[in-house]
Length: 576
Image: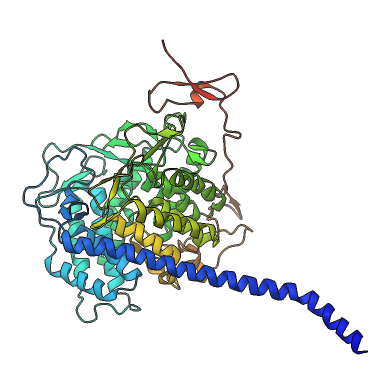
């Protein structure tokens, strides 16, 4: 009897012990992962303060830090100003890096330093300066930083700057927004790319601008209108966006550069990189933030066109907006934001596929080069630099939020290790001049603190996002998703076809928790028909092989037409 009882208990133990072992193993694994995330978040915190403290010591209140020489640059008037024209003589900076750091300070829990910074800006910052600035750059960095920080300072749950803050950042933002408005006084309503903060549009100012430059203003200027009650900011940005959308081709593609006076395109080649990138980003984020179906309809059409005409397997080339034919076959570091955008619409598989291509390049070079020629599998001969761009870290953060796959934590760790190995110097973090030699450049861009450190920190510690709904601007500044900002509550359709209840909308619409694919419906009489969703677009090019020369585009280095071989692969015409 005793023997039989012992046998029974042995059998029971053999049955349940694997389960106990697996539970114990899983708990141990979770514990190790949590410890690793804590360790990595602390590493990122130290990175941020190394950059921030050196800026405050050697550059503040000027715009940006020069970490190699431990000096400063008043760069707000230089951003986008490649020829360095019309630089001001008496401009002494606008504390650009401090403004860009404000929301990162809050996310990392340093309310004391945030309060000090807010009060200093309240007493000292002025925009009544004779400085010609790039509207897009000043909008996403300065206006976006001020609007976001005002919201954080007045958040009832944060209890920041109690009794001392009287909406000073909002007053500064409103003043800056008013200085933007003359830029929109054009025959088309499309804004000039450049404006003088003190005197408005300069005489003989260039009328050339980019798609991003006039189509990526709606978040910051829309939020400013909602906060101040002055509709002019949102109205100007919305008018420009609508005009830009009306200029799309019959394929729903837009070019890269245009003329704000004539409304004519200058550059017809387009893609998802520089000059166009944030246009796509702001359509979907404006839909989430403001609830306008108009933004979703624009985005859906544009996104489907990108998938049809730019996508080639896991990466995206450029194409002519008029014909959809391939032009340039290249990856640029700015394109690395795209997987993060795809997470917002639930296209996780496609996001992961593209993200891995950028990770491969990061691992190959140690950082992400500015431009990589896909048709030659080589670096661009002159654009071999890495200016601390944060887009890969941004997409890594979004994908981890969507999947909780620990592989993305490993990617984040690799990014942190590379930055510390190659770009950290005694005076801060320096840009890389050439990824083949890792020679450094004397510039610490403000977006390193606004985006790179923020997204890496949130990857490892997302406690700031618990029970809060935010979208992040293209410069990484958080804006809350609030029903009071929605003109009309948008309706989402889940993959099973059922509607999302309005009381759950805030969670569904949240950029971090959007796990359903938004779609629109057409109502016809008593029935409604669901139209094509942007999720899970199949690759239009099948096996990615060519059928005609037009499929192959132009060679990236010689600018010669590439040919489609008899075997169906793209090559290069060689002329004698």
